[in-house]
Image 1 (tube, rainbow, N blue to C red):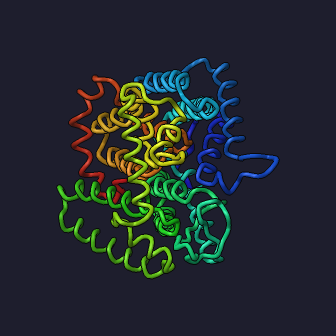
Image 2: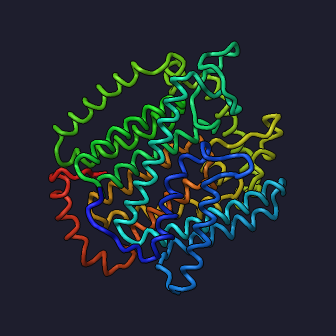
Image 3: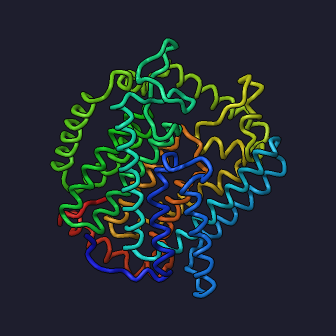
Length: 429
C-alpha cells in the first residue's frame, strides 16, 4: 500500500505506538471498558514511557522552538491560575489532565519528524475517524440515539421536543462531530501523501461517511459551519487559478449535499434546519451562557477566574453552573487576556509560518486549522487530546520553515512549484 519504507528515527515501537494512539483518539468512547479503563489513555501512557526510554538512549531532541516555549508558558500559566480558582478539585483535575496531554503533544511532535511520518499519523487518525463514522451510522440504522445524558434511546423526538442525536459510546455528539470533521482533513492529508489511486478513492468514500455521520450527530458547527468555512477557503485558493473548476466543484458539492440530505432522518433534518435560527432553544441558552461568561470576565479581565471555575463564575447569573460551549471564551474567562494570548499564539504562529510552505502543504495546514477552530466554536476542547494532536502535527509540519535562511532561499522556489503541483492531479489538501 505504501510507496516506500521509512526509517522512523525514534525506533519502530515508539512510532507504531504513536500511530496506534492516533487511531484510537476518535474511538475513545467506544474503547473504554470498566475495569480496564480507556484504551487511548493506556496506549498514551505506554507511548510516553517508551519515548522516555528511547530518549535516554538517543539523547537528542528535535528543535520545536518557538512552539515548545509557548507550550511551557501555557502549562505554567494554567498551573498558576489554579491557585486562585474557586473550584480547587476541578482545577487540580484539570492540571493533571493538562500535564498528560501536553506531554503527549511533545512526544507526538518529536515522533512526527518527517513529512512521511506526519502523513502516517494523519492517515491513522483518519482510519479511526472512519471507524467512528461507521459506528454512528450503525447506531442510526439500529435506532440507538443520544438525548444529552449518554443514555441509549429510540431515535425519535420525545415529548419534551428534544431531538434525538447519534453518537459513539454515549460521548457528547458535538465532540464526536469535531473528531469526524478533523478526521476528514487528516484522511485527505494521509491518503494523498501515502496511497495510490485506489487508496485515494477509498479515502474519498470514507470522508463522505465522516460528513454524513457528523450530520447524524446533530452538531451544526462541525457538520455545517466548519466544512463551509474550509470550502470557502479552498474556493478562494482555487479561484485565483481556475474559476471554472471552482464553480464546478461548488455545483458538485451542492448535488452531493442534496443526496445526503435526502438520507437524513426527519429528526436530524429538523435540528439542522435550525442552524441559523437565533430563536431555537439551544441557541438561546448558549447565547445566555456566553453573555454570562463575558460578564464574569469583566470582573477579572487580566488573569481570569482560574482554571476550572467557569461554572462557578456564571452560577449567579444562570442559577446553575454550566460549561462555556466555546473554547476561546472558556480560555478568556478562566485564564484572562494573558492566558488567552498564550493559548492562541500557537495557532497564529502556525498560520503565519505556513505561508512559506509549498501551496499544497500550506493549504493542508490551513484547512486543518480552519476546520478545528470552527468546529470548536461551540465547544470547550482546550484540554482534549484532539487539540494537542492537531497542534503537534501542525507544529511539526511548519518546523522546517522556522529559520529566516529557509524563508529567503526557498520562498520563490516553493511558490514557483506550487501551480505545477495543483495542476498535476495532486489534491490541494
